[in-house]
Image (cartoon, rainbow, N blue to C red; front, side, top):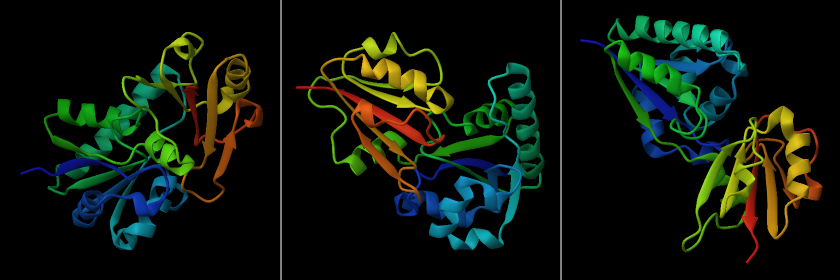
Length: 229
C-alpha cells in the first residue's frame, strides 16, 4: 500500500472560494504540502488555514520551489520536491499539496504531479476556481460570449503576437515585465483593459483602463483585455 498525492486547487485568494471537495480532501489528508520553506509564510497556507483551521495541527511538508526560469535549477528543485513527497507516500500517508487557483493552470504543482506518476505512485488533481474566473466575477464582467475565443497568456514571456489574437486575452504572471506589458496595452485600439492585484486577498486593487495600470505591480496581478462591442 502507498499513499496518494492530491494536488488541491485552493482558488485565487478568497478562502470562501475553496470548494467543498478541496476542504474535504485537505481535512482527510495525513500530510499537508506547501510550496515554501516556512508554511506560515506561504500564501497557499495563509488562505487555506482560514477555511480549514484543522490543518494547523497536521504534519506539514515544506517544499522549496524557487521562482526562476533557469532550466537546470528548476529541474533540480522539481526532482527534489518529488523525492520529498515520495518519501511520505512510501509510509502510506496521503498528501494534500496546496496550490493556488487550479492545479491544471500554470501551477508549480504540475511538475511534481508528473514526476510522482512517473515514479509509480498515485496522484490526483482537485480542481479549484481559476484566478481569471474569480477576477472576472470580482470586476462584474463576463469573459466571453457567443463565439468569442478566450486566450490565457503567460505575460512574463513575449506577448506581442498573442495580443493580436481575436477575443478576450487573460494575461497572467506579468510580474517584473509590467512596464513592458503596459506599453503594449496602451497601443491597442478598440479594447477594454482591466487589471486586478491580489484578487480576494488583503490589499486587493482594481484598475480599469490601461492608463491606470501601474508600471510596477505584485506577483498576483492579472489583466483582462476584452474587445469592445
